[in-house]
Length: 170
Image 1 (cartoon, one colour):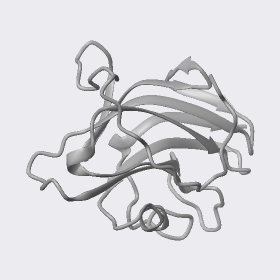
Image 2 (image 1 turned 60 degrees about the vertical axis):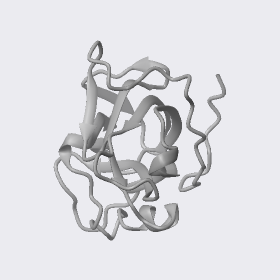
Image 3 (image 1 turned 90 degrees about the vertical axis):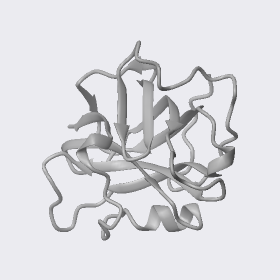
Image 4 (image 1 turned 180 degrees about the vertical axis):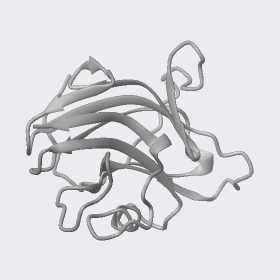
């Protein structure tokens, strides 16, 4: 498995795969928020536990099976799923390294099938607890989606239900 980090904020087109097992199976814990669901989540090759430890600036490697449930949306809606970090106890003025870091899906609704995502996230330099969260958006471009959840913008701030894991940066 290639575990080379990719440049942070790099947007990659994900090719949906019909070979990935359906992420809506009830035989394993799923994380569901808004219109997306994550399961079979692994960080640095390990199954996710309640809280993981990382060093400031460390790059973690995440894999997961991902799906969308889009009942009621037309076939030509552009969807993105963005992932990033949010402080577990809330934002403090001047925090760096938080917000969206990757867009793991950019596709029309009709083209989305369950897929396996793999991405990297860089931990903030400031010690503390951070949630790895996801949110789905319907922006025109991945760049637009990423820009709305940043260090300075909370417009697309994912809800707590979108927490994939909690990382203790120390």
